[in-house]
Amino acid sequence: MLIPDPRDLSAAERLLLAAAQQRLRERQQQAREFSQGLYEQYRPHMVLPCLEETPSKALIGPGMALQSVRWGKTSPPPQQAPSRPAGVPDWSPVVERAVDQTFRQLPHPPRPGTPEARAAQVVQLAEPILRERLRRRMQVEREAKGQEGKAYLRTDRVERNLRVLGALAEAAYTLIGARGQQAGHITSYTYFTVLDVLPIATGLSTASCERATRDLRACGLLATWSDWTTAEFLDRATGEQVRTRARTGVWVCLELRPEAHRRARIFPSELPRDERGQLQPARDLEADRRVGRTAWQARKEVRESSPLQRRREGMGYLVQWALSQAECIYSVVRDSLTSPHLAHTTSPQELVWSLQAVLSEHPQRRGEVIGEAAQALTRLYRDPGSFPHYCRMLWRASEAEFRGVPAFRQLEAAMLRTLVAMREVNLRRPGAYLLKQLERAGWLESVYRKARLAGPGNRSGPPTDSFA
Image 1: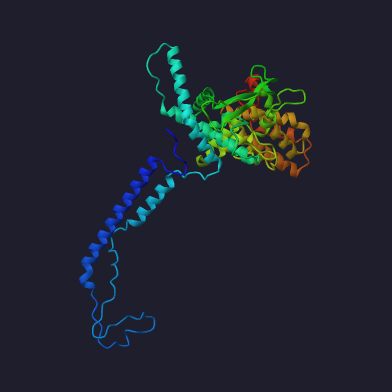
Image 2 (image 1 turned 45 degrees about the vertical axis):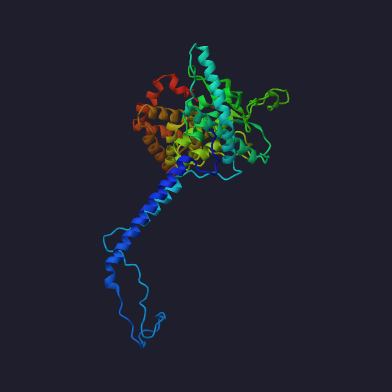
């Protein structure tokens, strides 16, 4: 079954529209019958007396419309509809609002020439090819298992695959428009992206997106090529930074004009290479991790944003790794309630408020956030020599918060007292004064030393369980 033209309404949408129009006509007819009954009921009381044979001065006066008077016999003026009696509700505004809301709920077809409309055409062309190849594949699998009978294709499986294909095609046409290319004669397109953000663009689960991409690859509508690089990660066992291989994303080749005799294919010779002829990484993974430009951070930001903008943001996430740094608009904003921004902190309250985001920060990012907080603290106290001391203090406060021990509140009060003391007297060692205040409050015994005795695994840094 082919997908109808996106400018037309589907059969279900036509039925919904016809039902709404029929209800509107019935309610309008009831309103007319009700008004006619009231008119017939009150008509005897609305008969005006006949005019005099000689028009008096009262008939034509200032502010009154000139009425046509027949000499000898006058015709009464046209009767107006009676006003609605008190207590009788007027349902016409309610019906109009209901119809307007029904029209707003119907999906609006995309404008021709937009990436959405072009992606819908790709899905329409790919649906029969996808169904045929999936049936053939399922039949081969049944015969390999020794099963007899005909293989039936589930409708939700086809819809899932087409939704993922439409999202990838829309991202491809978005890139074509952003790069100033002509989309009319392009049959296949290759670009770099991170497939971990597909759940944002499609609204499906991660497992459903993985199954859909697997089916699209098997049917020849999609081809992928993994891109690898080396980056530093934290070894959970030893607590040391080690360099290891990591996948930065995938090169995606998509058939924009699907045909039965053609399959998507990526040629490694067409991928970017360096001077030595080696494949060049399409993404600086370490730089993206420092600024939070990762798929994990994107999915966290979208989970905490409005669901009405998820699909639009998902398209931005899919294409942001393919655009250059000058063309790319970062969708993941570090200066938000979900990620700390410590570059312009001017008070202990702002510093501790920013540290609260460490609790929701990715483990690979926590060490960098603690370092930024320690730098902000040395700038606030004008004490750059105590940077390691501030790092240890903030690390153990964060570890105590993870264990359920409140540590940030007392730390904020002690930092505020230290800042006030710096303004009143000339403190040469603000770090030692801060430590003394925390010792008097019992913070060192309940937080600092307990975190130190918890084991080397907690002090070495966060575990490694992220993905790019």
